[in-house]
Every structure is written in structure tokens, then in C-alpha cells.
Length: 569
Image (tube, rainbow, N blue to C red; front, top):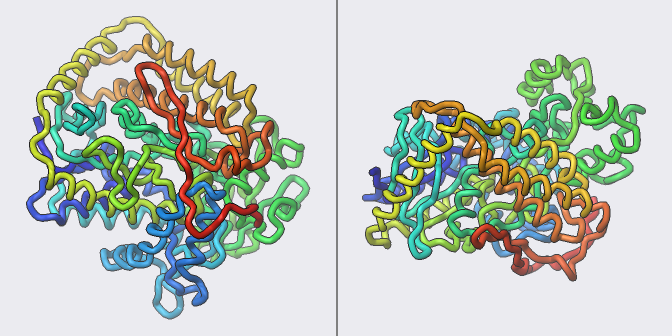
């Protein structure tokens, strides 16, 4: 059995920042568990930048303006006390990243450069060309190694073990060692990212974004908050869903339909392409639905045109965008428009965090940060640039909270962790000994199809009720899924099997939350309830589990200085 004071699960920006903060507390043993090599998380895919009111590009920008942009962007579902705490911390968080060695792009005076992003009233998105997440991730990994964090790479979380509502530890699968391992811990930080792969190939997320931590917390008795709010990024490559950063529009790119129109003039005449992501995604899907897209069905798309920016600017500011367009669409954006369509991008909902200052959950010893968590600062729609900001800010707060918790907790119930590990040993034997049954791919592909077609950018009750029926049947079929590999060493088939279970669990919470929310707000757009309903639904959805039942309850949104108003761009 391994033992840690603080165990961080997930090696993205939130997990790395949490581990770095926790290990700075003298006398604590800190582990970082990740199912991949640490620098291959979703953070590395984040291209465009990180928000913070540094006032470099606009001396009239302010913390207050950033707070209001975030509240408005959230369609007034964000908790305003948490947003205020978050936004106020960002200038120092970005300066700290600069100090740690993140190579930010610079303006003519040598200051951190800032660009425009959707939903922002000032250019406040700090960036490193279009590889911002990548360089932040590598800088944080370097610091974790420097400060002695124990890294458990290619270890997969199987279960969070509790006793009487308190954390005991986790059970993990060590892929390299080929063993199931009990790990005792006084505190954990769950920073495992989102669940975009429930839409499979219609997502910008890496293949590892399967909702592992969200599902594990849900099984451990922690509710999932606001799961229905799934962000669809407007500009995923048409064929693969791969992200074309918002930086491409922040630098001046146009969106064009098959008539050559910059169609955003119909939907957000003031902001145009730099309206919020939910509005731009809905506009694109409307253009396609009404016949102004290119192609048909799931292959339909509109175009992202960068040609007018010129070769020099594209090569300096958007080099990865160009490389991805050439590699995956055989299109050079210097000379040709890029085919794009909305793609599942981000989970605004997630593990219910009940204290934004520490990132604590309802289970003593369990903390959550990053995309896996719902604090709630993004509400119904996250602003571009606020995600990298979220992970470095709340990663730090979660690391502090977990360290303080661990320092104050006595010994945990290790026997409960050992018993849970023995149960997983038996489960491994059962599923790998099945000689017949359903394949993981069969269930996964049907899940993705029903989620994209029925719980996508536009939603109706009839479509989602049909989706719920399918998801429930897939959960039943999952009980008979076989894993055609008995080897414990690097058994990726077993990992894919557990990932599928996580995706099914999270998908059901998404459908239930969306069915129950009879309004349109932010990313949740219902054709049968097209208006926002502040009287009935200015509240957070909480999905919890009791036995096999999924129950829904609600919690009020925290309003401080910004009463809900109509959102116009």
C-alpha cells in the first residue's frame, strides 16, 4: 500500500498547480497520479491564452470589467462571490507564471502581450503565440519535479474510497507495473478534466477526457453540479473536431457561409465573430440548418477565413492553427478558408465544490479543481481565456486547501482501501474472463451518436427523452461488456472499459439536468423553451446518487453586485 498526505489526481494545469502548492508545505508527502505522461493533458491543447486584467493592451481595463464580463458571459448563472474572488487573483497568478518561466509573447515595450477574446470588453487574454496551455503545462511540470512531487505516471483512478463520509484513499491501476494498488491519503485533489469524449469524435478534447474523476466523485457521494451546461466551441475542424483556437478570431478571422457572408452580423452585430462561444456556435448551426453551410448532414460546415490577415501575422500569431489545418484538412489558411463546425469543448458543470476558497467538496478530504470541478465561476457559458485562468487560480487554492486538511487529519481507515482494492482485483478477473459479450466500441459509438444528435447545440424534450432511453439501455448493456485481454500489464482494453463506464455515468447526468432545465441559458439551448427563465431556473442543478437512482435537486445562484439582465452582444 502506498501512503500520501496529499494525492493529486490529474496532471493538467490544475493538478500540477495543486501539487506544486501542496509540496511547498513543509513535511507533507505529495503524489501526482496521472493516467498518461504528465505533459499530455488537455491543458496542452489550450491554444489561445489566459485572461487577467494586466492593463497592458488597454490601460482602461479593470478587475471590475473582467468580473462583469464573466458574470454576463455565464448568462448570470455563475456564483458572483466566487467570480469576484477568482478574477481578483488572476493578475498575480499570471505574474507568478511569468516568474516560473512561462515564455509569454511580448508587446513592443516588453510587457506580456494581450489579445481580444470573445465576450471580453477589453483585450486581456495573455498568450504565447497559439501554444499557451502547452508552455504553462511544461513550466509547471518542471517546477513539480524541482520541488520533489512524486509522479505516478500511467496510473489510472478506479475508485475514491470513503468511510462514514470521510476520505480514506483511492484504488488505482498501475498500468506499467500491471497491478491494482491501494493508496491511502489524508486529502486528494481531483483534477482529471472534462468528459468531452462522450461525444467521441465530435469534440476538441483529447482521448483521455472521459470524465473519470467526475464519475468517481459521483460514486463516492459527491453531487455533479450543472452537468447540462456543455460548451460547444464554434471552431472545431469539420472532419475531426480538432480545435481552431479562439485566437484565430481574436486576431481578426472571419466566419463565412456558402454565400460569402460574414453571417455573425445577423446574430451579434456589435461583437461579430467575438461574441460568446454559445452564441457563435448556435449561429453556425443555424446557418447550416437553414441551408447556408457547405456540405450536408454531419459533414456540413462553414468557413473560417484568415487570408486577409496575411502570411506574416498567421506565421507569428497562429502557427499551430496553420499546421493543424494543413495536417487534418489539407488546407493552408494563408491561401484558403478553413472548414469548421462547432465541437464539444468544455464541461461548465462538474464535481460540486462547496467552498471556492479551498475547493472542498461535501466529502471530508476530497477537493476538486479545473474542468472536473464546478465552483461555479463559468455558469452557463465559459469565456475563452477563463479556463487556463481557472486551473492556475483554483489549482493553487485546492493545493492549499488539501495541504491544510491533510495537516489536520489523523490516520485514515486503511482497511477500507485494502478491501476496495480486493474488490477491484475480483472485478478485473470477471470482465477479462468473459469470452463473449458486447464490445466497448459498440457501446461508445452509440453513446456518442445519441449525445451529438439529441443533446448537442440545440435540444428538445422529445429528443432528450429518447437519449435518456438509449443511455439507460447502454448502461444495462455495459454490464455485459467484455475486455478481450487478461494481461495486467498495460491492459488498455481494461482502461477503455472503465472509461466507458465513466462516460455513461456523466452522460446520464447531462441528459437528466438538461431535461429538467426547461429554459434556454448559455450553452443550454432548448428549441421548445427558447427563453431564459430567471423565475424558475436561476439556480444550480445538483444530480446525486442514491443506490441506482439519480436524483435532482437545486441550489440558489449567489448574486452580489450584478442583478440578472438581458445578455446582448
